[in-house]
Amino acid sequence: MRGKLIGILLGASLVTFASASSARTVSPADMDRDLIEVTVPQLQRFYAEHKYTVTQVVQWYLARIKKYDGIYHAVETVMGKDALAMAGREDADMTAPHGPLWGVPIVIKANTSIAGQVTTDGWQGFTLAGHELIAPRDAPVVAKLRAAGAILIGHTNMPDFANSDESRSTSFGRTGNAYDVRFSPGGSSSGTVTSVSANMAMLGTGT
Image (cartoon, rainbow, N blue to C red):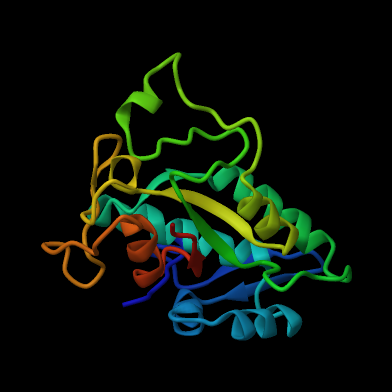
């Protein structure tokens, strides 16, 4: 079950977006059809054909999180502002050489550091006001993903310290299975599994 919906398009039939070079009108139904279960080669073909901008695609995934994460509790920290800023930079530099994950929205497990973000590791103790575990730099895997052009859109839920095969954390609660929230997606990379399966991200990291 992988589906997407642009939040700012909810209830609208057509919306005009400003791209790096022009403005074009896209249909939410078209984006759903094209982006549900999309692969990296397919997405990059859409970019090459100027069918969608990176910003449009990132907005679509962020809206998907906004609509469904209240049900699944998969994405603990949404990094929408940073993701859209990065998408804008990529749109403005369409002719530059691109990495293999250019414009691909991706989520990162909450035990993997993203510079400036709280690394909860699933434990509420790392989120206490004034005592948050804020990463001073990116973990090596995150730095490599950025270098490849990926767009980081969020940190995903996980059981405390990855010390369980279940999907419940003290920092964010329980993550439900993308196909039936009554069940668990397993652990400890539960948030990433549900995020990708429910089309709230294209790819994600686990440990």
